[in-house]
Length: 287
Image (cartoon, rainbow, N blue to C red):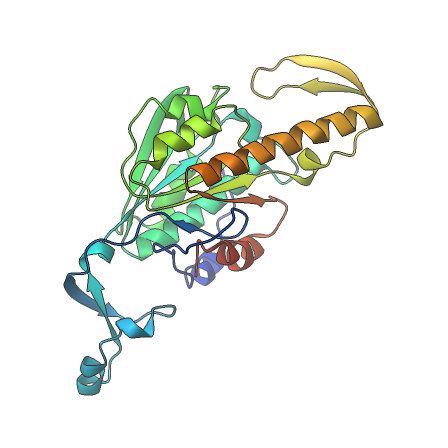
């Protein structure tokens, strides 16, 4: 599926940096969780200072000699792996601001940010109903990243999480992009939590999914099974639906908290700059 790729926006978004360190938090609605502290702090190399770097990592003696700002890098920060789980089941193909298209855009820009920082990315998705993945590194050009993502088709599977649990996951930070329409969320987060240093779940949901404004006789079509059902939607039905949605969202919050993942709902109707420079920064994913 093709999605929006603007080189000017990319250059703007690339001013942000992926936060590999995470932050400690007391709730699930705000921040990128840091599950484990770094283990090795052995000095390895220097790199140029970039906006957002901690000043304590600047080698001031080197600056005094060369008038260049250089940052010390250590063994535990030279290269990290970020696992991105992209839900491409048919329930994501919904909304005027299509959830799957927005998920692809978010994945594209985040991958571009991560590889620019010399870290690796493994993107997990479903190829048909089979779990699959593709890798990106510092040599991955944005055009190639775009081409790879745009070729990922919607899956016929009814449950992304069940199928993804069939393959092992590399150790590293993890980011899940999904609408979380599954009863296997808890099992999936347990599956990928081993070796996760920082983890976050982005729940892509439209406003009408959370708070529908439908009334009268309607035909409901399950986007994954294609089953159809006619129903008269009145205030009682809407109330019951909201109760089910609220209970489901609460169960996701409990699971993310249980396995050490932060959690945030993203509305695909928001523009990308707001998502990245406001929502992602506030979440602690980017800085």
